[in-house]
Length: 377
Ligand SMILES: C[S@@+](CC[C@H](N)C(=O)[O-])C[C@H]1O[C@@H](n2cnc3c(N)ncnc32)[C@H](O)[C@@H]1O
Image: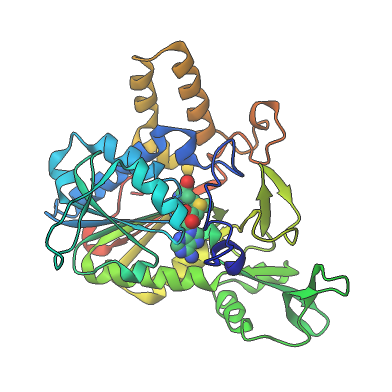
């Protein structure tokens, strides 16, 4: 999964823009500007709870086209004390997407005559510095930190296990005689079984006994530890929004190409691979990593956006727009907060249902010094 998505030469994300109607799938920031604006409200509220520090690292993991951060900065640009405090750090493995993010944030690379000084890049949306990294660990530490991960955890590689008469076996990819790929079960436990044991430790015997397949994401556990260590030492918090469940995931790995579900093993690198996020394992990993953070949620995206005031925002935007813009605002709003059971998008056979409001969930991890973040109190 990791190779298919992020191989430096042929990885799915590496050389292209995969988002939107012309791409393979659409995400909430691409649905409506209100999504990034509401996340901006959350970030500003946390910054206030942190005591309005003069300098803050605002980190986004996997920013895609950069739309969320652009809407956040544009929306917050009137709050000068806040935007003045920000050093924006984008953690992105794809050079093609880094370029798009640079454009979307209207970045200007400062001319710099002196060879030995670091060249700065400034987003003209709010006058903040912007830097790119391929790993969270590369972002300089020592400043209070706010981390956003929207649809990032779902792209991290998972391991799948299946119950067999010889015990739990790992599902693995094999090459068949005709050179096509196929799934096989491991003949005996694999090293990844250690992660299965770790995950099962956090579940009840009843929960596990009902399942014949289990998905585990060790990278999500490791990333959570890295986030928690950063927040414990530097202060601040993290917001994770993704589709997933608050419990053990059975079998959710999926491939999407041109808005359709396709076979996972078909032409690897040409379709997005993602899996449901196991929010319970993130919570347990966070709580095991440090006693200095508190974990909140998950709550549904609909509750998150509703309690932050998206209704007021849509009303305000509707006051001053054309009929065409009003239509797009209304459909965007319902798509963000609507129920996942709603009819499919505009009668098309798009594999993403119209409502992202309950399928997507929000979780916050914050340094205990700040108290519970809005709207999780
Ligand atoms: C599903 S997209 C989400 C994009 C964006 N957050 C949005 O909601 O529109 C995943 C993003 O994470 C990036 N990404 C995936 N795996 C990564 C990794 N291991 N390290 C850094 N970036 C990664 C992809 O290039 C892409 O920008």
